[in-house]
Length: 90
Image 1: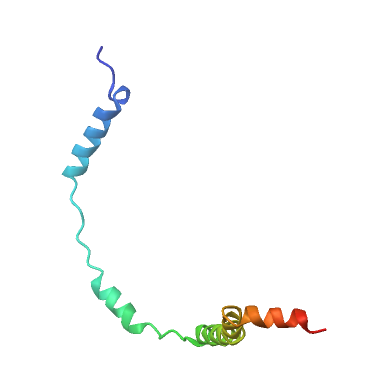
Image 2 (image 1 turned 180 degrees about the vertical axis):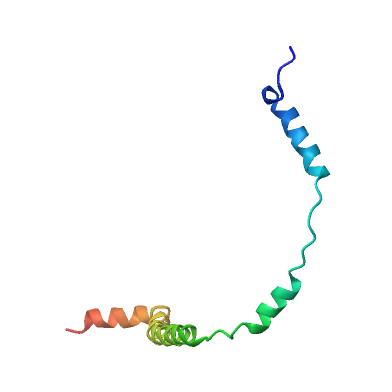
């Protein structure tokens, strides 16, 4: 049963690995090019992000100004007495 290499995938992969170990890898340094590109990079403007943050803060403040007194009124122990007194007023 002497099949070809292609019939045994594991043997085929082992031969490719042996050939790959024989190859010499090139030595390349890209550090200088990366540092040069970092130095040349322009600073990013945060204008749009600042406007979105300011708008979100304004909306959150408006919602908080409306919701906090509402929650305090609902959770007040005197709310039940207020509702009972309204039912007696004609």
